[in-house]
Structure formats: C-alpha cells, structure tokens
Length: 448
Image (tube, rainbow, N blue to C red; front, side, top):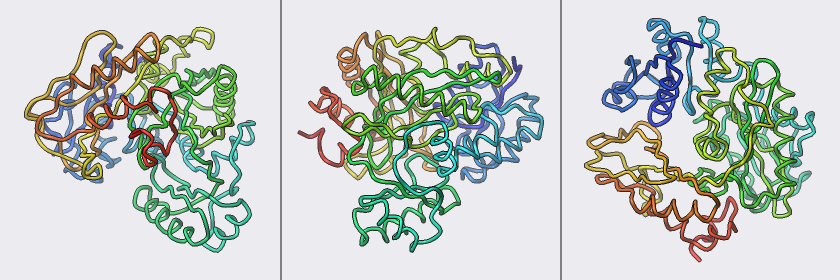
C-alpha cells in the first residue's frame, strides 16, 4: 500500500479521496490554486501545495506543476479524481515516467477508450451492440452529408475525444446538419483541443444507463451493476439512481456482461464506467467509456457496500480485487442529486458567491459529499457543483421520500442552488413512475 498520495483535483471529490486515504492509513497531499487557498480540501489534507494561479490552465491542468508537487512531497501515487486531467493520457504517461503510480487505467487504455471511434471498434469486437454510424471520425462536412444520408436522419454528431456531454449535437435534416456540425466541432475544440467528430444514428428519447466496472492487474474484472442517469439537462446529469427501475433482470444480465466483456478486451485496470443508450424496447447500444471514477459513484457504493475509491487505491498499489463477482449483490435503492451553485430561473447560470450560512441534512439513509462550509466563497473559475446529496432506502419509494426530506432540510444562504428544481422533479409523477428519458426535462415531462 502507498504511504502518501497526491490528489490532483479540488472540491468534493478531493475531500472524498482524502477520506478514503484516511480510511486506508495513507497520507493525503492536496494541491490548490491561489483561488482555493481557503478551500476545504486544502485545509483538511495532511499536506497542501499551491500549484498556481486561479485559472485551471495554470493550476489544476498544469501537469508539470502537479507532478513536481507530488515528487517534492514524497508521494508514490497520484489520484486524478474526475474532470481536469483525469482522462488525459499524457498526464497518466508523464506521472508514470516520473516514477509515480497513476490511480486509474494506463495511458494507453485512456487513449484507446477516450477516442470514441476506437472505443466503438473495440465494443464491436467485444460483441457489444452499437448504434449504426461512422467507423471513424468524419474528414469534413461533405462526408458528414454523405454519411447522414447513408445512416438516415435523425443523426447525432459527437466529439471523437472527451466526454461530459460536450461536443454533441442532433440534426433532423440536412439543413440542421451544417449548424450542428460547426457548433459541435467548435465546442469539441474549446473543451478537448480536438474538433474531430463522428456520427451515429440518433436513438429517439433513450435512457442513459451506465455500468460500473472494476479491473485489477491480474485480469480480474467485475461489474457493480447499473446506474440510471437519464435525468439530464443538455447532456448534463442532475439526478442519478441505482438500480434503474427501467432495467429488467434479463436486460441487467446482458448489459453487465457486455460491460465486463469490453473491459476485459481492452485489459482495463482500475475503476471505469461503460455507458449505454437504451431505447423504449430495451435494446441497448454502447455510448462511451469513462476511464475514471464518476461523479455518481456514491449510489453504487450505497447499494453494493463497496468503497470504490478505496478499491481504486488498492488496485493501483498492486493488490488484487478484494472480492469476486459472486460477492457483489444489489441491496435496496439509492438516489443522488448534484447540488450546483446555479440559478434554474436564469437558464442555470452559475452563481458563485459566499455561503453566509448552510444547513446540510442528516438522519437515516442520508449522505452528503461536499466541500462547502459556512463562510466559504465559491470561486467563479471552476465547475458549479458544490456537493452531492445521496440517500439510501430499502426500495425506490423509500429512497424518493428520503430524498424529498433531505432536499427540504438543505439550506444554502448567499447563493442560489439547484435543490428546489430537483425537488420539483422528485415530486413529479414522471419521476415517481420512472417514466422519463434523456429529453424529459426539455419535453416538460416533469412539469405535468
């Protein structure tokens, strides 16, 4: 086991990793930007190192500064969390070359599965269903026109690199294709430095369902069942749950086995997520793979009893998986709400500011992952998520009631958050009946 780990991230995920380090008896070293000097992760870590100015490009995306901080503080490993450099193969490669363990998959695997076209080819080779589409990135707009005619409208354009809902556009006809192509490519360049796009058949009102997997250095791969992530706004998740009320035992078996098959094919190590789109007839199609821990990992922890972050650290240190597939069972139901400092009434505009006071919920079955505290000033430079509210129930009904109770007890004074909007969704008939899909917010299904 490592003696000291550097956490190359901030916010609630940095706090979560610090907690896992403490549980394992490992020294946690935080990094922080000048804007995050008073951030919780920088205050509670065993050691903290400033790595640059407020701009992420100068701090949390500064590979050389982070690696230098790890070496100078005597760390043996780096945990990237999610976002920032977590899926950057160059960062994983540089860390490894510096003699540091990267708590995640290898650089080669990140590169392979981070390229959507290559990931799709491997999915096909592993026998995983995929939607019809291009074999590789489009060379130009003329090819996009030809491929759209071959595939048939509507089509979806997706960034060949990256994820997180960025660089995705839908076109219903050739007139819409040009705008979709240009805007998706521009967004992909802005977020990933790569404007390449590929195209696939658009599945009408699908579910977004993902499977959590873990793989070790010895060829062992297990799944930890599925998460329902269909409550989204512009491809950004707001509420997640596990298990999915839409997934039947037969579909669960097929999807989880497909995920394990793909992970084994690419020699996957550490935590990862295979994402699928599922149509109304319960046909599922490979979407992408996230080669990191996910924001919504707590719901899986709640229903399986597996500490995913601790398992990540153990795997990276060379230990085999501490359990087999036969040891993992679904128990009860968990729901997560992402708490964002955003104003739904103003188009979900970010609302940085100072938290004058706050009250976080508690009681049976309630968990809060957050880096917020009274007096903390939320900086305007980073993602607007300030925490996650997670509840557990013996079944989905109890979990819904507990989430409503927890949201009602949640108070942030000084900034506007998404909690009232999420309460609206949780109280809707569509959510109660699990009768929703990825476009339900845009379609107003939760307003009926």
